[in-house]
Image (cartoon, rainbow over all chains, first blue to last red; front, side, top):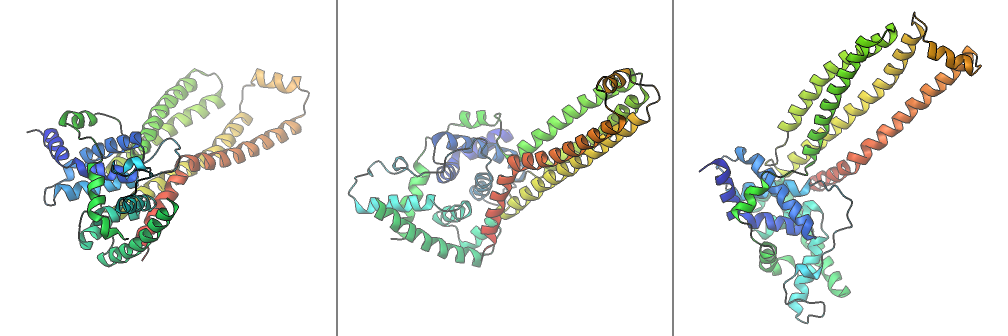
Length: 166
Length: 211
């Protein structure tokens, strides 16, 4: 199997990671497509540095987050808006399910976070320990814990606000 | 209502909201162009190398074909200068390519980006600012010491009925305006291309370092 075939096969298996990052950082379909392509290319270029001593998923997360955070948008675009089309079909504007309304509010609140906070939340949702999150972000585990507490508080308040507005 | 309560649903939502890509789709993507700022810088440097090379050739042709000593010296020296500068650009291109390491921790990657872009902006600005007075005064000095008269220039000065002092004052005003104009234009241009982006990256670094 050639290096390219090996890479394509690994990326195909772990493409959920790339989609997750694209969904979190971009709101429009075309922007997600651009970011998906960019992450794929950057991962391919960096692939020779993947020595296999770490999990491919962890390595891919690092590449994907680095690419999303430094992604250079050529055209000036309007700010990111989290719309209901990003949510499960059962949630509509006049949906009455309180749990789903809360989920929608929480999703919108995550969309309001900074690029760095989004990355930390994403890794937290993946159940990575603080130590691993710290290694990927380049900060200490203690710092991750402090940031995570702050993010949770921020999300709680923002989600509450979103819920009141809806 | 907190994040942990929706951890699973959010995770599922983020990972399932897409259409799966086939192996062929992914393989096709590997030959497409990238949008990264490192690639943008690389492309800029490649263009500078290309235009630098074309400029050098043009200057060399002008230096060898003119009958005026001043013009020959000016374009000859400029061609040699560009030739040396091309090696610096090639070195910068090599360095830029080496820095494209997206598998590093986020903070290291961000720092590398900021250092590289700021260095590029600084050198570009310094080079432009240094070249403006050097070129202008070098051209003026050579023109002043030109042995054979330039009939077109003499005719122009003669037709406008301006004295040598007035011509000199106009030239000095032109030199100053051109230099000041170039200073602000270069600053604006660099800020327009990279300024906001660098600020955004620095904000990310600040966010990460915040305790």
